[in-house]
Amino acid sequence: MKMNKLTILAAAILTGTVLSGCSNDKITPWSTRWDMSPELQTVNRTGNEQWNRLFRAGNTNVRYAQDDLYRVMMLDEPNNLGRVPIP
Figure 1 (cartoon, rainbow, N blue to C red):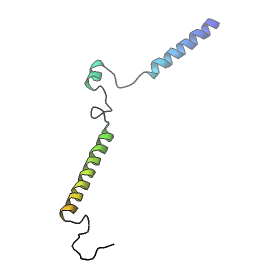
Figure 2 (figure 1 turned 180 degrees about the vertical axis):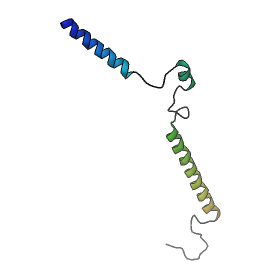
Figure 3 (figure 1 turned 60 degrees about the vertical axis):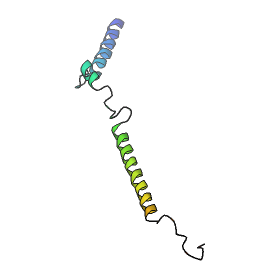
Figure 4 (figure 1 turned 30 degrees about the vertical axis):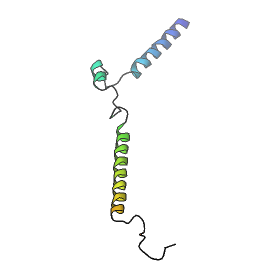
């Protein structure tokens, strides 16, 4: 009787292990070689990290352009043409 319970327990564990490992996406050597890291878009960044980097760079470039425009138009600081200093 004890051996029979042990056999049933081992069969249940084996069945559970086999069923939990099943999936529709079969992993083959070629699928692994084709895309070694599917979650990464570049060498070390995911898609969201790459988008964040692009938008941050664009935002910084726009700010630099606005600063340059204000300097060219001389709007970045008050002029010193008046006779009386402004406190």
